[in-house]
Length: 310
Image 1 (spheres, one colour):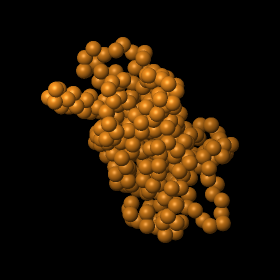
Image 2 (cartoon, one colour; image 1 turned 60 degrees about the vertical axis):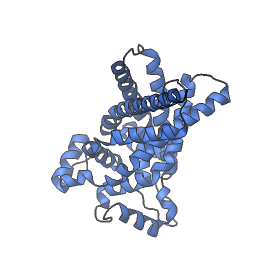
Image 3 (cartoon, one colour; image 1 turned 90 degrees about the vertical axis):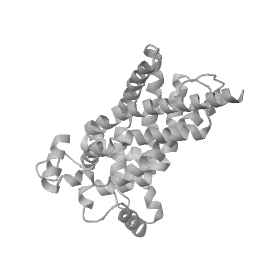
């Protein structure tokens, strides 16, 4: 989300988003186990009980995976999200910029408002969702303990899913993924706008970085609060192998949310929240700092080039 300055062409916002995604992904290998823990907890149905296959929270899940499956299992499926990160973030920020211009023109607004920031973020999230669904499906199926003997890696998941369930099965969970990204990005970009209005305007580059870390981290945290229920049902929908003639228990997003709530209680809709927010809260701050910094660099390069032409 760039400041209200002279706009840059689409390619610049796309490139800045990609660079921000790569920057956020740099510490990703160290943080990836948090994603594995999140998925394992989300896929666990019913109330936790004793045994190696049941987890009583993040730390219990971590200990049991290391003890019963080995430390390497905490990194199973990491290739898919690493490959996804740059195009995902590039699409997020470029779409947010494009949708922002579209809605400002549509509603006759010269500047962004709180409402437009939420609407723009939601639209960018919906756009982003179409990029991530196949990668997310591969990642979920590799992270699940029950799939340990089914797949030999990312390519094997794709081949077996397409062969056994059809090509469109790679987009299982599209609807729930749309809702997940709509809610997260609405919260993320909406909070960034609001926080920037509330905190004192920075007078230095260092101050701007601090403000962006605060705004992005708050946005990432609020977005995670908003979208975790959809993330829970998305994990379960994408981990379900389609069988001809059978309707899956978890099929559509909102009915699945209701099913989880009825059978497991409201708290189950926030399974995996702690490892998820530990990654996406600070990650939202990193994203915004890098994106804003790269966009500022692109503007400076453009202005210097224009200055030489005068």
